[in-house]
Image (tube, rainbow over all chains, first blue to last red):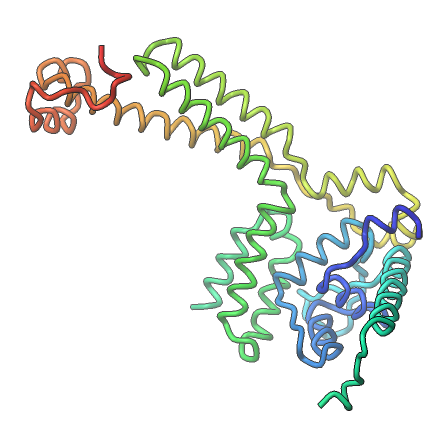
Length: 118
Length: 207
């Protein structure tokens, strides 16, 4: 892993969810909130404060960027965000790191599959 | 009502954050308040407010500088026999000025840090298209007004404390002499309530 990437990792839960929400397509703030709720099955919900605090940090770091896109009839207050090249690299590196972590956990713990656990 | 409170919370955010995101956050509040409940959204807004001032703007540096300044002034006042002596006032003033300058130069905003990061590592900031799409909206730096405000508060606290110490000296040394030295109506009334033979409250103030 490049040393510059190491400074971004590990990602916080909110940051990871935001980057994942933006991985497929560009979205506006409300779209990100809905996608995060969908990804986590409603278990993790971002508030507007947490979302924009993270978006500010990520745009300042160049991980996420604002697009100038405006759909016809869109609310003028909506702004769209998307991942940059750096953002994609960071997300991919974090996912690889998490895969390694899960592999390690499976090796050491007799983890039952969720459907068999009960 | 809750919308107005949320709006007030947004208004209290740092100006650069407010200009960028407040309208959108208010829109999200309108969209989600029915489903999420006003309580959780207000709590989230309050947390965001604290994060913005304490973490993103590095205001903790100001807090540390102010705490240092107050401590220094407190030590000077505690050690001086007469808090109105030119020496005590001069040292306190210098201490406050030094801390305000430290706070002013130490307050590195997130925006400025990001600009430095961009300049130092341009390769990390993706493709030219990304750079073009990202608006150049680095945070306007507002440390100086804040530092002066902090300085003003410290001076105000100092003046108030000085007045209080003055009252106590007046009460301890009798109404007659106090009226000449601190000629305010409140202080004179207070001084009259205390017997003239009472002992001083603070040993450092005793002559």
